[in-house]
Structures are given as C-alpha cells and as structure tokens.
Image 1: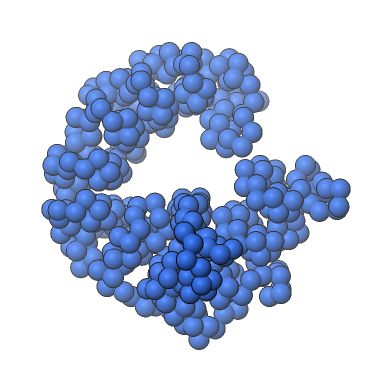
Image 2 (image 1 turned 180 degrees about the vertical axis):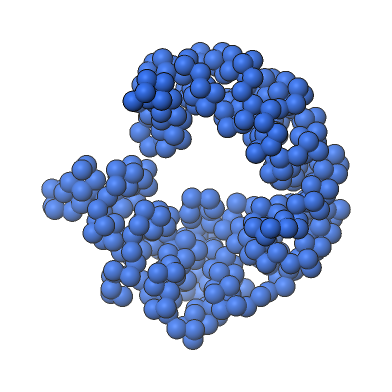
Length: 417
C-alpha cells in the first residue's frame, strides 16, 4: 500500500511525513492503514522530535510504545521539561506506564509544579541569561487543545506545565481542591491544555461538592469564572455514565435559566452547547430564541443543539421551522451544521428532505456534502447523483468521506448489492 513505500533513502513514507512535521500527510497515510513496524518507528521519531500532536495521532492508529526501547524515546523528565502535555501523555500511555516508578512520577510532578509556579519567562531568562524580547506563539498540542510556545536565546519551551501537573497528580491519586484547578485554568483560558485538563479532571470526579462550587460561579462578575463553572457542569453531566444520571435534571434546570440571563457571548455559547446535550423539549425551547442571533457562532450552536436525540422521533413544528431557517443561513458553517443535524435526526418529514435537496446547489462544497449526507440518511435517492457530481472526497477530509460514504451505502442498499 502507499504509506509503506520507501523513500529514496529507504525511509517509510510515514516516517518521512513525521520527520517533516506534516500532520496532514501523516493522517492521510495512517488512514491508508500503515504497517505496525512503520507506526512504531514513526512514534519513536515523533517523541524524539517533541512532536506531541503527531505522537498522539500515531497512538490512535495503533502505535505500541512498548516496542520502543528507552534509548529510542525521550526520558520522562525531558518530556515534562518540554511543556507539551500531549508528549508527556504519549510517554505515559497505559500500555507501558509501569515503566515508570511512583518515585519517578513524583519527581517529575515536582518539576512540573516548579515550572508552572515560576513561569516560563523567568525560567528561560535564567537558562539563557538573555534580556531579549520573548517570542510567544500559540501552537496546537493535540487534536483538541493548544499551548503557547515560548522562544528565547535559541531555547523553545511550551507552557503546558499546568496540564502536565494535573495529569501527573491524577496518576498519583493526588486530588487538588476545586479552587486550585480553577486557578490553573484561569492562568490561560478556554482551549488551552491546562484549562481542558482542569475542567475534565473536576468533571470526572462527579462529586456534589464540585458541582455546587461550579454552580455557584453562575452569578460571578467575571465571565471567565462563569465560563469555567459552566464547562465543569456541562462535562460533569456529559461524563456521567451512572444509571441514575444524577446530574441531568440539575444541569437542565440551571442551563435553561442561565441561557435567558447570560450576556457574555463565550459563556452563552457554552451554556447553549450544554442545552444541546439534552434531548428535552425544555432545552429546545431555550435554544429556539437564539435562532436569529446576530452572531453566527450562536446560531451554529443552536443548529448543532437542535438534535432530536433518541426521542422523540419527530421534531416539533417550532424546531423543524428553526432548522429550515438555519439551513438557509448566510453563514456557511451554520448551513452545514443544520444540514448535518437534520441528517442525524430521526425526523423523516419530506419537507426536511426537500430543504436538504435545495442545498445541493449551495455555493459551498461542504454544505453540499452535508446535504448529500442528510439525504442519504433520509433514504432519499437524490443523494446518489449529487454524490457523483461532487466526485471523490477531497484529500485529508475524513468528514467528507463519512458523508459521501453514506450516499454510497444507500445506493448499495437500494440496488441490493
């Protein structure tokens, strides 16, 4: 297959992609099902390059860190010092975590704590003795979060030590107080790895005291604190796998009231996102007033949130009308998301299929692809010709593959293949 073909110097294509830091190419090669030997060699290289994002990607596709000798990887201390949470988590993969003793984990936890408390600028100036301007830029750390990368005097370090510290505490069964984890998160902001690790760690505890502390932030004057509280509550409900689903009712009550009062757009998006995770008429009723909001991020949140979930099988007339409006929104992403919501929903009203078909001539390809997907899910044969007109998925667009495959599967069922 294509991903194992050697380059001129005998190096596999996947290893070459990792060496070049080309994440998009690596994803495409991995999707072609790279051989295990190539995966492990690429993983070792990614770790040595401090490329946490690539290391995590290779793990997702089956790389086995246990097959890499210690001399083929960084030491855990070096990884912690780098400030990349993704890199540290790759080295602490559950398949070979017992390579590290509790004492070693405690030692690097102390290092992460020191780096977090002192701050990167002070540490870099101590190391380099330079008084030059510090260069700082946000960089992706894994598929979902980012960190800031600082460079001074030829040394580059990421500022994810707060997230690393929280992860190591979890492995050592250290349980920081709510306020401690919130302070770490607020040092950065939503989207940063430290914020994400803090909210996830608190949510996974599923404790009433944490829920109460988060709920108390709803009326705080600081939008960032309200945002933190909203995210902790949203994730607590989302991660609750217990049969009783104890946080579902309280979450719906709080977020329904909160949605009508919140004035900060970023916090409002989080609150509306939380409502969209409830397949409940009260949640839909709270979302609907924002269908015509001036900010497309709000309208997009509504478009994604108006899912029918598992019940009921049909949308209410109000929800159906809102989705029809959102499918014609001026914003491309809103139209696309509305089409995907209609496709994933259980409502098979012909008026929705006709609205999807109207989007096959949209000016944006991604909206057309979403409309094809929606029609395929509606078992509507108009998806077949539309998929043919769109041609093969664009390289590196797994979402297009998923959507167009739905049309191909429908055609096979229709033709009895």
